[in-house]
Image 1: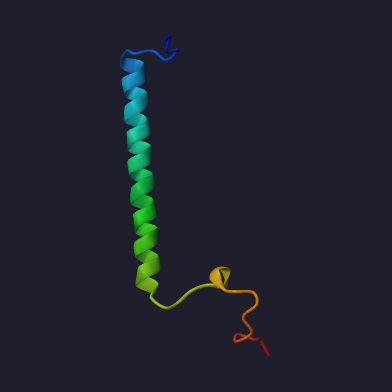
Image 2: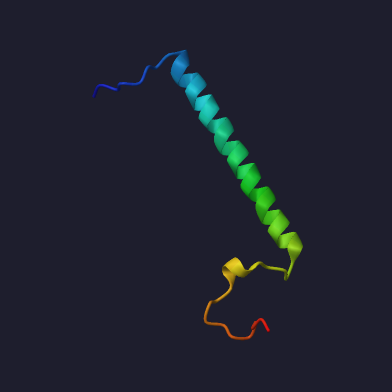
Length: 58
């Protein structure tokens, strides 16, 4: 088959950039998960069930 991507240093640098971007994304997501876990029982209303009537505003 004919691969349209170059196999030289351009491809290697692209692969390196993609790996770095994936690594940074993973680190950011892990940090977000740690921050959410550190908040404990606190949660915002985005996860709340709209049919739940226990949190009525008066």
